[in-house]
Amino acid sequence: MFDEDLRQRLSRYTETLHVQIPAPAGAIQRARQHAIRRIIVACVAVSAVTGGSILGAVRLMPTPSAQKPSAAGITLFGDAPIPRGVETTLATAESEATFSLRRPDDALAADDSITHVWLSSTEPQQAAIEYRSGILVLVQLAQFTDPAAQYAKVAKEFGSSYVTAIGDAPALVIYGASSDVAGSIDMVIKGVRVQIRSGDTPLSIDEMLRIAGSVDQG
Amino acid sequence: MRDEAATAFQRVWDREYVRIVRTAFLMTGSREEAEDLAQESFAIAWRKWGHVGTLERPGAWLQVTVGRLALNWRRRRRRQPQPLATPEAGPVEPVLVDPQLTRALWTLTPGQRAVIVLRFYADQSVDQVARGLGKRPGTVRALTSQGLARLRLILDENGVAQDVR
Image (tube, rainbow over the protein chains, first blue to last red):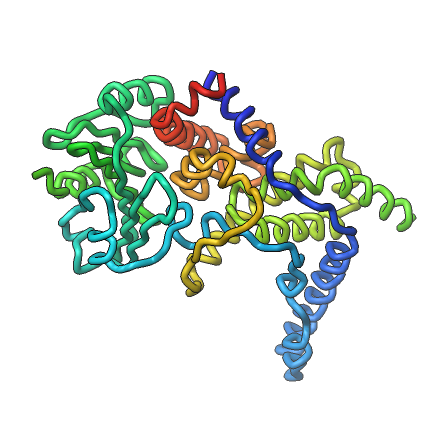
């Protein structure tokens, strides 16, 4: 049921993105440039073997991105991990956030290893904290009326996850690439929802639970 | 012969361009990048037109191609230093129409988002997505399940899933 709802919703959502169809000449031109670059790369390889050099010619070739369409750009995601996220400092985020910025204090995720902090400029307000380890923590006011029930429903319907409690907080552990790796942990602590994501490096479930357990629940 | 190919390519372009841009938009969240990736997909299609032109559904091939390009695009961006993102004002865009869905999509990892978009927006099968993204079918199924779980959490939180019924 949710699958079908999602299909309809995605379809309706994208219909509101108005796209003008340009002429296909730009794409065909790109294809020609790809072909020319491949020939030049082959020549460079041959040249390297024979001692000659045509690297200068390669540098003169335009890249495909130089042919970007000139449509008015609108970026929803940008480089922030939250929509309309604006990079800021931890101190600013703490003072401007409308919720307590609950975050871990662990060897893999502590204040002294924070690399980026973002605060969204749209409602509902959300904060994101990235650590040197690649771990990403998203914080916002929880809107679940009953997080434990919500988590149980999701785990039952989709699998790949299980419900647990971390301290007094109901939590959902979502598996990563396999069931011994945690992709993320979602928990609600006194009305604040904290999501901890493992980033590019797979972490064991025990490691993720330890990090989640280090979040202050006071 | 080349004229015939150009005519056929133009037909596919006219029919599929908007959908390819929208597919890329769901994965990147950027109209400009989506249009760039769509053009890149069509450029690859033109280079391989001898094969793509014979396909029953060239649009399906374009969609998984733009999905793969979008994944690579995110990996490249993560490796490059980027200027700070700033909120932009603009005409009525999807983010303003459906902020919950935008937010929900953004909670997914790039891999989950690519799989969810290709499965549920582009209507691709698990095997098609696996072939297109160079992943195993089991991985695609796992990413689908994880992505749906995350989406459900966010959309249900705001009562959105119920609203669409």
